Length: 151
Image (cartoon, rainbow, N blue to C red; front, side, top):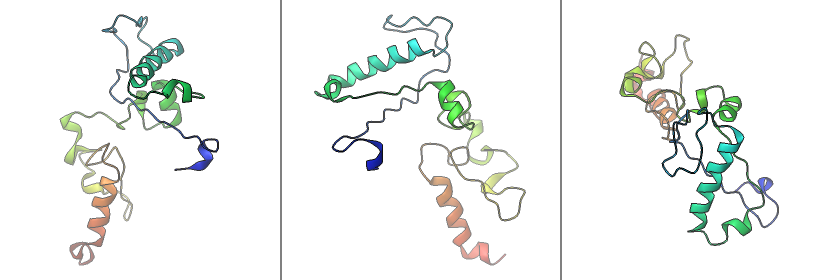
């Protein structure tokens, strides 16, 4: 735990909801007006408050222990990291034609790049996002293999 992120005796709770639409088309509960479909501050906070209320049903002191909250939407997330286009936490489209040998590009398979000795790793490469360090592991395994050194 990084003690510099919270006052003594306190801690941080990070809630990341990755499956939200980039453009809001409606609210099944009928509580949040989708308006023009953008995640403006009013909609962001209404949604965050709903999530916190639901979590508060399971975490008894959540509301009384909360000192502050920061709510980030797609625009803010993309501003923090240009690779997260439209706030997409997966660093790119996650359709089947964007995985395995096609991720990130069909001509850059196996994590190789056109630059000798430069390898491409991260969420936008195979095996994809959400697999913490998976691509780095695959590249390290390849670099440490006897087959690689024999070339």
